[in-house]
Each structure stands twice: as structure tokens, then as C-alpha cells.
Amino acid sequence: MFPQRRMRRSRSKNIQPLLCEITLSKNDLIAPIFVDETIIVPRPIESMPGQFRYPISGIAAVAGELWTRGVRAILLFGIPKNKDPYGGSAYDPEGVVQQAVRNIKVKVNEMVVITDVCACEYTDHGHCGIVGDTRYGPDLLNDPSLELMNKIALSHAESGADIVAPSCMLDGMVSSIRSALDDAGFDDVLIMSYSTKFASALYGPFREAADSGFAFGDRSTYQIHPGNRREALLESQMDADEGADILMVKPAGFYLDILSGIATLGLPVAAYQVSGEYSMIKCAAERGWINEKETVLESLTSIKRAGAELIITYFAGDVARWLDEKQ
Image 1: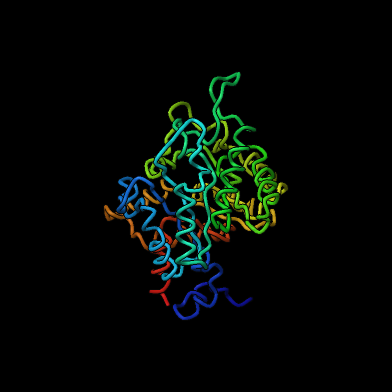
Image 2 (image 1 turned 90 degrees about the vertical axis):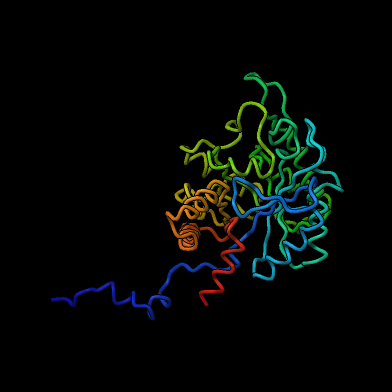
């Protein structure tokens, strides 16, 4: 008779840490931050307990605090003073994100600054680029919007961004931005593409946080239907072929099967634990239904287990502190 296999032998408190297959690290974390040009003191985001919009004057201190905790990368979203149909303030050299990047780099030059490249916060209609008439009615126009994304990405690079992250899901956006950056001498700036972004119900709190709700229609004509796996994988493959340096899946927790598939393409993969995922955990924890710390760490571990090298999460600062406590 063969010796009996006992899996519990490896689960003792002293042995288990040695055999843990997936371990979270501070280097896995990217903290999203909202910068608001219209405020002078931090403003709480009601639908995202514990999160704030920060004024331009205070953003460097926020980045410095995250750096002190061990978070090495941030993702910036801007809320501008002025909006128009064409998102002109998104590429203003003195725009909200451009100023924020420069301020952060003065205080914490080593911080990896990633900028969201999109127009939804900057247009008065709330869509992600230039809108015009199509055979199906008003909708996002792909190629005119590409020109806008090129301008936004270039202005971010000129301000000192290390990575630009186009999130508008336009066809050809990676190759277009790569050419614009290279032609301007910014061939060292990385592109982290929102390469597989679903038309999810989980973005509601973000739209309040970033003031980016749409005035008509929805974004289902340029984001992926939640049921489409093949399309999701193809979108990331195309962005990889166009020169993306990092691919991204958004949202994270509901799409771990997609994440694991995209992780096989050979490029680094980021996953965005979005506002709705954050708020669900926060609200359940506040009611005492779940343990916040344990749930967050479990959720991020599962995202990493599925294949993400980078995790964008509003819990980044808290997780960094919790990881210190475990040591």
C-alpha cells in the first residue's frame, strides 16, 4: 500500500508561508488618484468611502505619502475647470493633469506617474472623444478621436509622465499614440493600453468621482460586451501587435478568465479593480458583513493568481500598510 498523501502537512503555520504560490507585493500596486482643478481642499467622494478628489496644490503631498508607504506607481485622472465638445483642456499644457505631473515629479521624481489618456472628463457630452453623426445616430468618431488622443498623450509626456494609458478603446489607438510619441522624441514613454475594457455596470462610482457621466447613449459601441471572450482576447492581441508595452483588463474581479487568457500573450498585464468593486467591498465591510482587510487581500491575490503583474486598486495605500503589518 502506498503511503497516504496528507495535504494538511503543508498547511501548518510555520510551513505554509514557505510554500505559498502567490504572494502580494507593494511593487504590484498602482494607486489611482483624482485631481480636481476646481477645488482648494480635498473633497470626499460620496460613492467611494475613503477616497477623495485632491487639489492640484496638494497632489504632490499625496504622492509623497504613497511613496513613503511603499507604493511606487500612481494613475492620474483629471477633473478640469472647463469642458467643451472637443475636450480641448485635456491637452492644455497648463491643464489639471499636466500641472499635477510636474508637481509630483518635483517632490517625488522616482514615482512612476501614469496618466489616463481619454476625453470623457473633458467633454461636455461625457464621451471619450469627438462625437458626430453616424448612420445609427450620434456616436464616438474613431479617427478624429485618435488625433485628440495623440495630443493628450503628447502633452502628458511633455509634462513628465512615465507611462500613458489610453482608455478610450478606439481602433488603432496604440499605434497612433506610439507614432506621435516617437515622432516627438518620447520613445522612452511606455503605453499601458486599456486593451480589454468591458462595458461594465461597475463604473458608476468612478463617474461621480471623475465627473465623467455621459449626456446621451452609452459607451457600448466602443467598449466590449461582457459576454464576449474572443473579442476581448483579440482586442488585447491587436494592441500588443500595435506596440503596447503593458496590456490591461478592466474590470478585474468579474473577468479573471479573460485576464488569464491575456496573460499568455507575453506582455506584462495590469488589472483594474474598479470603483464598483471598491465600493462593494467598502459598503459590505462598513455593515460588518465581511472583514475588509481579509477580503481585499484575497481579492488582490486572486487577481495576481490569474496572471496580473500590476493591480490598479483604490486600496493601494491600505494594502501597503497591511503588508508591513504582516512582516
